[in-house]
Length: 324
Image 1 (tube, helix red, strand yellow):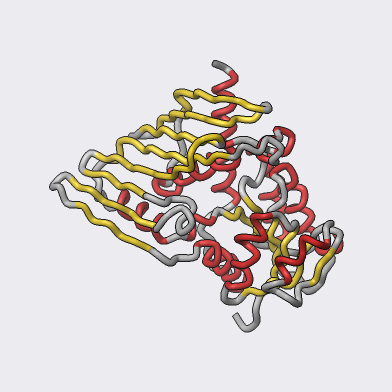
Image 2 (cartoon, one colour):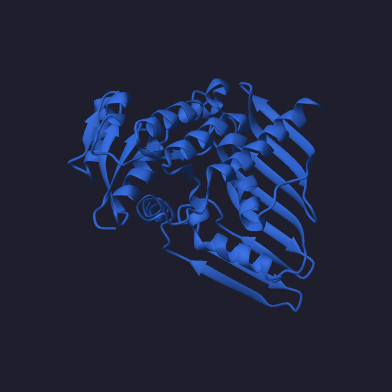
């Protein structure tokens, strides 16, 4: 890369302010040059670390900014597809926050437009860029736990604010779109497989969104059970149970803020080995990986097709629950 790639953020919400804005600023080969927000006062936190950032009060004006190469889209879920397609049509590479869409079929036109334009477009699935997940995948593939038999995943937090966008069904609210993408997607990330069927659902709804979801699925050779919740004590873990051992990921999703990234391997001989990544900045590495994909055509660890596969499972969960 001979010069930094210029990034812009479409929307000034808390996630962009706390995580992706600072990550873009810190990433090698990238610089944050523009922000789109209808509220000028929301630009101040971004200007504190990127004082020369251009602030566009209209999203279309940001897409017309010739000095922008990549647009990151952290808007509410129901706006992702429309603005990602607008950005591609404007000649920008696009990294769109998860979940890409509210239904799997909605992702198909975005994939087609990505292919048509030849631009880079993917989902911001940051855990795919953390080395702990590369290790888990390699351990399973190498037979460290023998034959995989069962996957158990949990991701919960407690959000009492019913006015939050996550409780709005028209904007893609619910625990499955918000954090089920992690428990379900991490299973695919580690095994490369998708479920054959959803075998059980038990979902609690508030404001017509799933506030707690308990889901079981069957894969070729193993089963899985996932729990996601927006009104439960904050908990994260992923466990892979095999015929000859167990892999436990202690901070699988928000490594660092939730706890130190650790992968614990327990085997039948009683041995326990723990690998640690105490200071790995997964958001920064995600930006650097996307920048490399734009500049050099490097492989990006998570594609729109991967995102679509996860959404297919979420769609199937809702359909199975509705049919109960």
